[in-house]
Amino acid sequence: MLPFIIGVLAGILYNEVINKLGWKKAVLTSPLRLSAFALALFLTYETFGKEGLFYFFAGFMLGGFTQLTFRSFTRR
Image 1 (cartoon, one colour):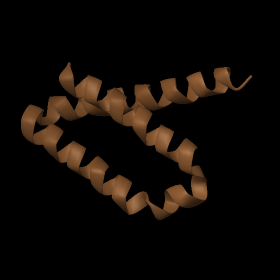
Image 2: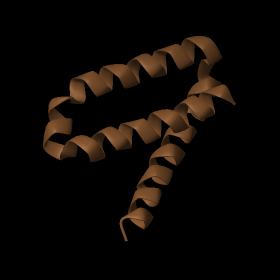
Image 3: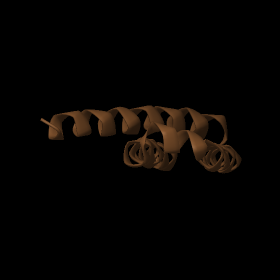
Image 4: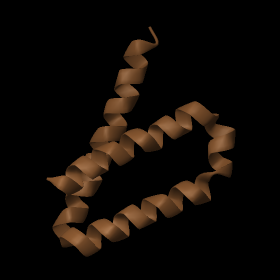
């Protein structure tokens, strides 16, 4: 359950950074974001194993989708 929650938070933060900075600046900071994402993946795998990675990715996708959906409804 903890990897899922971490994945949801990571997905929300990942999309929020892109929305705040814009695509051009987000591309410039992509090495930093990718290294943070890789560190989260590594720590999740080392702590929870393969099953933890599955829950992390599921949470990441759900968090990103939720953030994008919420943002599209609040802009109207």
